[in-house]
Length: 192
Image 1 (cartoon, rainbow, N blue to C red):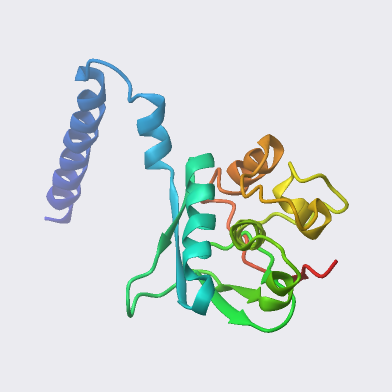
Image 2 (cartoon, rainbow, N blue to C red):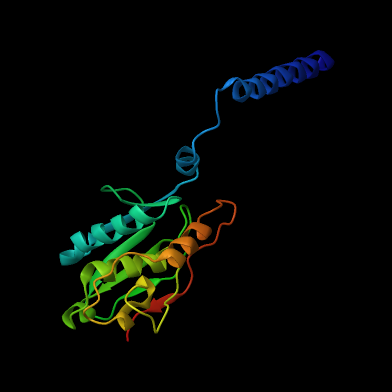
């Protein structure tokens, strides 16, 4: 009796394997590159409910990353949804948990510091820069305005909130494989 059960399972498994093998062979073409990228996208949810007056800057900073990388997406969490990144407005200098933050791992935190805003730094650049830390990028100081991760060394007049090519490539590498699970660790304080 157990021999028949084992044979039925093996036959069923063989049929399933055969049908799985035949389906891709019957398709007209492989998925387009943008479809493959969509399949490998990591979605990170951020909670900006404590971002106070910086909420719109956080949304713009997240949109900057979403427009420039393909395998990670920053999405605003809905009420009650577990967030991977928490954004909190506070009176000190901006700082963040250094990632890369991963779904199911420890949550990252961005402290959106009013001190930098009071000194004249651009709020969208601050948001995109701090989110860059959550995505695993360290500071690149000193650096030019063209480097998002140069932070305050880009100068008060710098409004660039777009990651450069090497910053984009580093984030793409950080989220290239879900098998490379690395949890957020450390704290980056962005004081000049």
